[in-house]
Length: 312
Image (cartoon, rainbow, N blue to C red; front, side, top):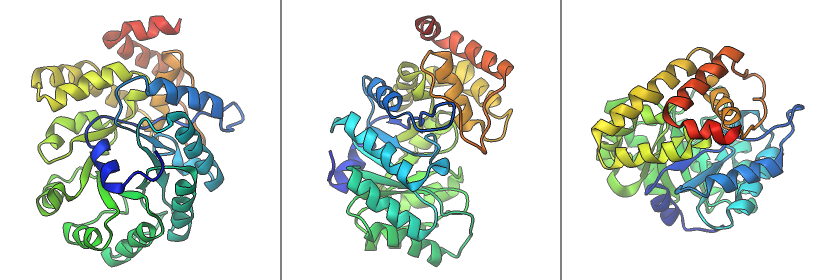
């Protein structure tokens, strides 16, 4: 699907649930391409709107540029045009431009531009960073609004006016006023993606602000459950959404909050629980403790006991 028009890519990912696969490592923390591809293949058996390779859940921050390119190329090869593949991109401007070009060379359909490394800047400096990346590629670009990369509505509007391939806005801030200002200003010009940790928590509220999709890390180990929850959100089935929050998502968030950096670690623990291990997380992240693993198995058993039985 390489070369997919940015607007078409954005429309397609906005129409369904998004998969953000973890990156598989062996005991020496080397990329396990075969296992990663097998995992992507399994995810693609389900109704997913797009696959984000080497994103935050894929430990983008721990990968070298060469590894990012390998992960993206593996996702593109396994996906074989079935859904758009969006590549992680970030760090300083020079590295981000290099990663953007690598992703385009690897056959990706778009970029998820994560915050620049470490530094804070004025809005005009951040805009220059984003615009430089947009102009370095023909791919559609999605900006990830979080941490030290928070755009106001005016800056975002100017970027969109100058860069037609800036087609997506992923929110990881949780500032409702800012999100409403962006949506009121930009309307259908952008595809909006929920990007707060464990995005299911906020999905129903965000839908009312034009956020039609979100990045589901849970999809890695409970794709059927994640899709059922997403469909309930889109149908505005408040009873089913609240049941899903009560029975799984909110206890899962409590478990995730037991350790700093657990947003990725808990996903890999979930994959271990359902018999699809992806290996350890890379430093500086740490894996869940044994008792936390057991608590997660209990949560999975409460909503999808057959997932654990199939792993036996």
